Each structure stands twice: as C-alpha cells, then as structure tokens.
Picture 1: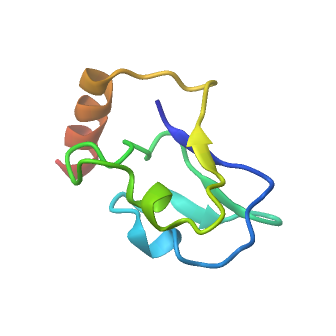
Picture 2: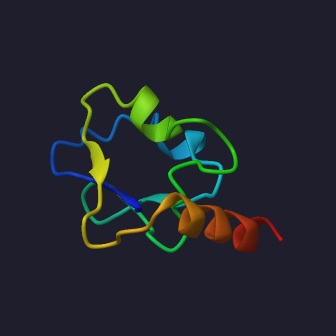
Picture 3: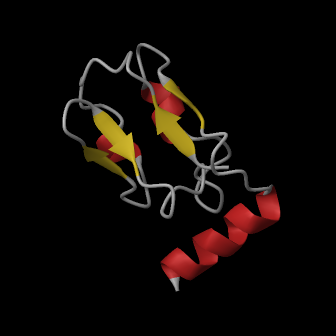
Length: 81
C-alpha cells in the first residue's frame, strides 16, 4: 500500500530527496505523498527510504490505498518503463 505523511510532519526536507519515484512533494502545509507514485520503494530498496530517514516517524501506511507486494512491483515497473 502507499504511504502517507501525518500531521506530525515538521517539514524537515529529508524525505523528499530520498524518494526514488518522486512521489513526495510539498503540500499546502506539510509534505505529502502521491499514492499513484508510491511503491514503498519496492523495486528500488528493501524498505521505504522516507521512513528510514524521517526523524519524527510520521510516515505511515495509507490504509485508503491497500496494495500487496505484487501490485507495488507492477506499479514500480510501470513507473520505470
């Protein structure tokens, strides 16, 4: 499933450059993640890099966008084709 950034975001700017799919962007008040581009880093890394670097642990699974590993891999392949 895609990830999302919660209201606890402190706009520290460390997650955005870590996203290999350019899914993270500055929203109206905090960073946001475009679900259509988020693969949880499947195809690139073993774990979501934004979660690894987030100092306040405000990046969580987006329950509104459930996807299994195969779906995330298919999205990765479509994005990198």
